[in-house]
Amino acid sequence: MLWDPALNVDVLFHDQWIIHLQINEDSSTWFLSGIYGNAKASIRKYQWQTLPLIAPPPNLPWLCMGDFNDILYREEKRGGKPVGNQESKHFMEMVNMCGLIDLGFNGPIYTWCNNQQGRNRVLKRINRFLANAQWRVLHPNAKVFHKPNLESDHKIFLLHLNSAQLKLRRPFRFEVMWLSDPTCKSVIHNAMNNHVVGSPSFRLCKLLAKCRQSLIHWNHHHFGNINSRIKDINQQISNHQAYIAGKLYPEEADIQYEHNLLTQYNELLKIQEKHWFQKVKNDSILHGNLNTSYFHTMVVRRRHKAFIGKIRGSNGTMVTNKDDIGNTFVNFFLI
Image 1 (cartoon, one colour):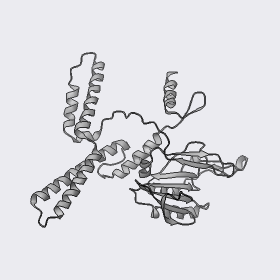
Image 2 (cartoon, helix red, strand yellow; image 1 turned 30 degrees about the horizontal axis):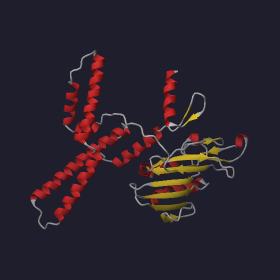
Image 3 (cartoon, one colour; image 1 turned 90 degrees about the vertical axis):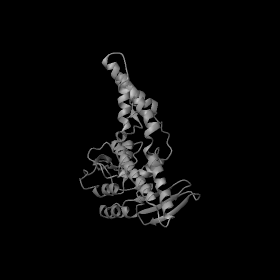
Image 4 (cartoon, one colour; image 1 turned 60 degrees about the vertical axis):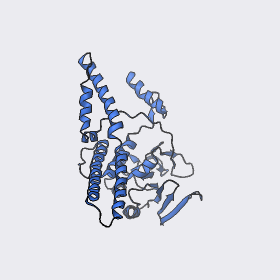
């Protein structure tokens, strides 16, 4: 593995099959692992059991790349023996245990070919980039490209960290967490009781539009950003606890104030959980865990999976421009 000498890089661990680095940048620190999965499944099993042991803390960004010699899904292999149910079990377990996300790719799916002909020809996608949710948030526009390689049986795969991505206007969505504030229902009630003249359907559309505008204004000026509120009250708690620590005999009012701050903090965490629960849209998850890091990982995975970076047009050509992709969808339904 090579890197620019100007980079601040620490080698944390290395072996015949892995080199694990810590990248120290001006504004962030993240981890990079270059991995080679052994050609023997029995040895790869040991490797996938070892990787979680050297994984960085889950709150720190981590990127893994390399030739894993394993596939995640059956469609990532063509030719040869059929993919068995247990073939990629240990690899998938490692990916899930480490909280990693497949970054996907642009280009042909297969990254390796045995260069045989006829029925003996086998193609697989065994080279890939995997990252945790924190790294994905740090580099939201990162894209992987598969490039042809005439000198090897592996394709070249490139990672572009700052691929251009159009930011679309965020649509309005009612937030379940708003119901935790009793004034929310009053805002809805007042908006829906405006006097509108017209047919029932016209009145309903106008009232819903008025309700949307009222909720947006109320959220901006009253409810506020839940993450900012948690950050603010967390700072208040830190400051107050430092203030109490400087007193030999804290007053009862100081203790009570700390208790009130902690109560507010826990209430905000519950509200934040509702926010992430709604984004995940997974009815199988139960409330009450306050596991926002898990929710956040699920949301990042959903966004990555739902992103449409290209589409085949009616004339068979691949469309990649964002505006052209939108027009392709519209034109399809207009025909």
